[in-house]
Image 1 (spheres, helix red, strand yellow):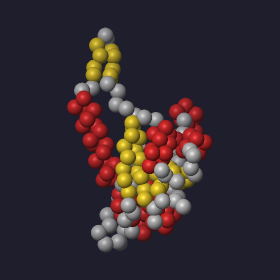
Image 2: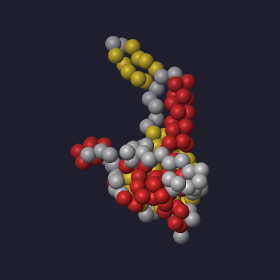
Image 3: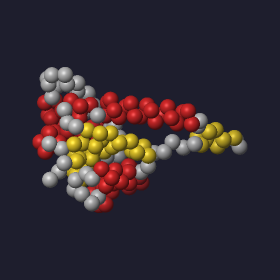
Image 4: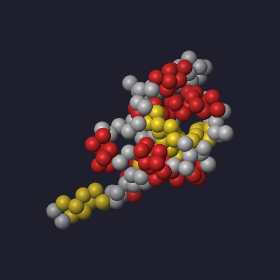
Length: 172
């Protein structure tokens, strides 16, 4: 039985369709959602030009992490809040596929939900696809929600008129 769904998002429209889909699935299954957002670690070195190296201060790194946390907890989680499902947020630093796999294991997720990648085919060849890596490496089922999936759009809109619900439709 599925009680915990891990949904990965990078904030793209594709990923937000997956968040809306996960919210509706969680409602149907009476499951909890763990919203995971992985970022590349902030490099301490910005540039090395002309023999000088510019460093990013720890304050800037901390401000960036705090801003990302606010973004995840407000905008990226909006479909979950609007649907009224129980959810937690998990912020990770590292490769998206590796961090989603680690998070799924640590939270005991029985299902992983992600959107299709925003990269064109050539970009996937160069950089890899998170959804592709997950479907090959995950120890649990993976649902890949195609961009523009109508059920996710309709599910997100279904709670527009719920009392106290606030919906941010990032698909537009």
